[in-house]
Image 1 (cartoon, rainbow, N blue to C red):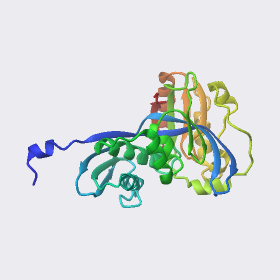
Image 2 (cartoon, rainbow, N blue to C red):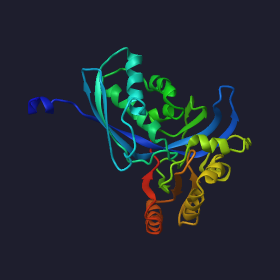
Image 3 (cartoon, rainbow, N blue to C red):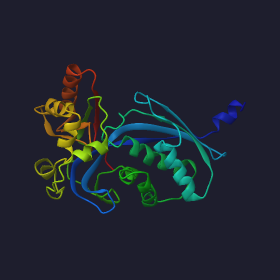
Image 4 (tube, rainbow, N blue to C red):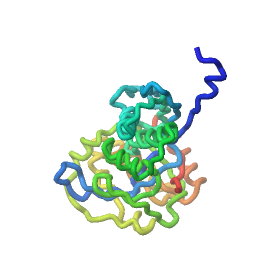
Length: 293
């Protein structure tokens, strides 16, 4: 049994796995490699899952999962947190280990990048724990093998994302960062594969993310109709958001089922959140803001 002073000497670090939101998601074509060519503006919430951990010397990656959405999650080798840790070990040629706790605050399979954000936060956490001198761009390159959304989640700042997620460009839209953002999930997990299978294969044109007005007027989520076909309650979520005072935009994120609403100010967002919680006590609702760099 370690002495109390030895336990106190163990350094524990914390990272947030920021929720990812697609303000717009344009699906352009299917690539020769089987992936879909996407154009999307990613923003990140100020809140998300929480990871904390400390380094060990045995090479093991030990994962404990708790939190409101931990049920049914496997902490074994297939978990994205463990896979990310093993990928960084292999990249470094090093067998330093870590004990990691993942507090799952975001719904699973919900279109806001929970697993991808967790993997990215793991890479950031371990780079700090293991005192690795590695640039974010290197981590992003390593991250692509873990999932299409993982590279963008490394920096977790507003970005234009294209290809299958490998082309990233920091992109500031005047007035967007810092906006109050309401996230709502009706408690339904949606399979990305089933949503893509229902996509109508129509290329409706590229993404203009030059201003908030263009994102509102010309932006879209090309997967929204297919996702509603899989989970009709998504349409109910969007209808519930529409018409709220101070609403700038309501749209589905990713492949669903989480939807987001952007508001002029925090008080109007809070008012909408109260109304939605009162009408749908079983829905998950999170009040947050778009994260700034």
